[in-house]
Image 1 (cartoon, rainbow, N blue to C red):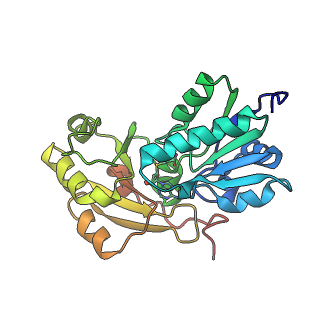
Image 2: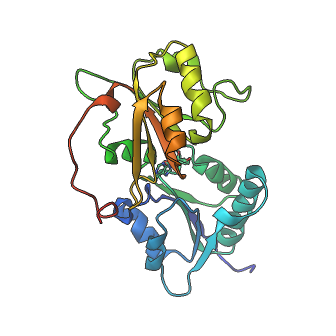
Length: 256
Ligand code: SAH
């Protein structure tokens, strides 16, 4: 291996699930890759585009806790790129929106591995949009926040300013939060958000199983619990959720 030249790592955002939402650059990178490390949230049918002999590694299945798994993923990136491979790290949505792309970049940089990033369409924006919920609407809402609900507002480990969020008057998009929906909605109401603010859960956005559950911040936890939401799902809260845009023509992935 001593003569091998150093390869590279390309961090590719795969979009929220519909293969049509992978960028042209992302598709080209997949086609040219020697090794692909992929998550289960990436549009997996796109892996059929890889060249013969490409090594496909499912890193969504690495056992043990998140921290260890990320260490293992970093090690795999360095191992393959270090021996000359053109490595694609294929992720759901955008790599830098709660996606750990920057951790992988730092690991590569520390090892002298060149990194390229191809941004993706984040579920934070595409998910609400495909459900007919615009994040902004002239005269109604001029700002939106995207936050992690991996830990809820009452958890000591949260770094989200839930007080400011409750008073932000804009649209709130919460990723990884459905398991804490009750705590999140109650926490926002307790911090000053109007309990009647329209709110929705969008599940499996950009797939043929997409579901949208609507209510208010007060009613959504019970409605969502009764609806048996399956992951991945996101929460969107704000006046824009109350807009009725009318029926949309289904996208490639959502049409029957
Ligand atoms: N980097 C990704 C987000 C990773 S965090 C992005 O930009 O989209 C994972 C969370 O994203 C999930 O818990 C869920 O809240 C959300 N998510 C990802 N794909 C989704 C989809 N197709 N539909 C709804 N939510 C999705």
